Length: 209
Image (cartoon, rainbow, N blue to C red):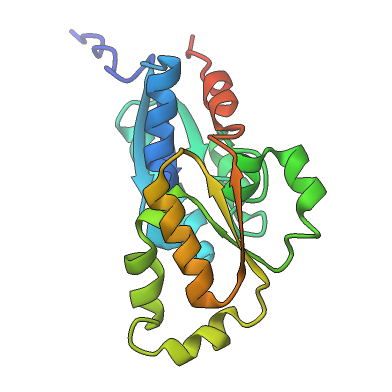
């Protein structure tokens, strides 16, 4: 005699496989909107440096999620420099991702980003995450704490630092301001909040039948 398999505890939940750089923001939106059906797992934030590695990592993560019983999966990445390769992984598994080229556009709103993209061509974007982790994510990996003369090599083509602020935190403002001073760039702060992330997460879930 065969017995039916018990339903997976994840059968009516959605797993967001997100970028580690926006994990805090995804959790904040989940709480803010009461999206209790969402679970979150993240790929390492360091993949920001290696976008060519994102598609393979996402492919593996989706396969694991399916094996764990998740039927509804949402990719918490925009294209993020993968040149369309992430879209191929999404199509392979029948899942959707965050719209747009990267989280900097998502936070500002895709239409708003389109209007400033040309003016921001030489902008170095910072977010709350990048402010919180500026030392460990930029200074030390690039060696700028030991060799400040490299600043010109890495940032010589930039004209300004644009801080896209998800929250109103004076401590993070100071980090962004100091970063602009250290890099010798003009400074601009834009209060974006979570941009289009709440709408994307709120509309992503469609329970499996």
